[in-house]
Figure 1 (spheres, rainbow, N blue to C red):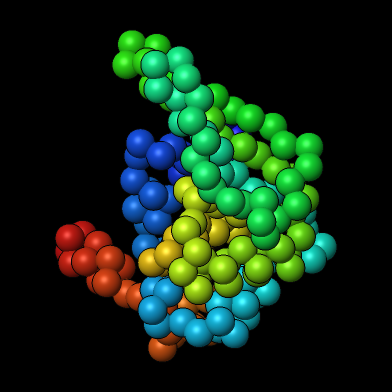
Figure 2: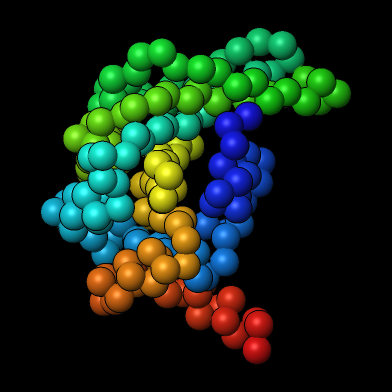
Length: 176
């Protein structure tokens, strides 16, 4: 599987989403219902710089009893997919598995297009985008960003009135 250890998370559909694998200092969450399309675009342009290659990892298919079923992710409707690599994670005993697709060098405009479509209600895939500094998980409900503590602190200061603090406050209360 692709190494995402710099974010201290493990991308696995059977595990919690990246946000819940990270600590409050290394994560920030935006609720889709609290954003408008221009704010979403601004956030994406803030975290992903054009001079750093951006990669995409998503669930392309499921395996059940040795048969492969498409996840119907429709990622290709917004993002040009070329030269992708598949990682198959299979549980031989349960006869189940997941096929993850990794696409290198995704264009920022395509990420914005995909995320805007999800914002507008299109069905989302189990998907993350990442570069050397940030990992972005997006669903119909949330936009989660994982990064180093300094970068996340800066994002939290920039978007102080916009980001969701529910689990940050909850985690803080549990630790004290």
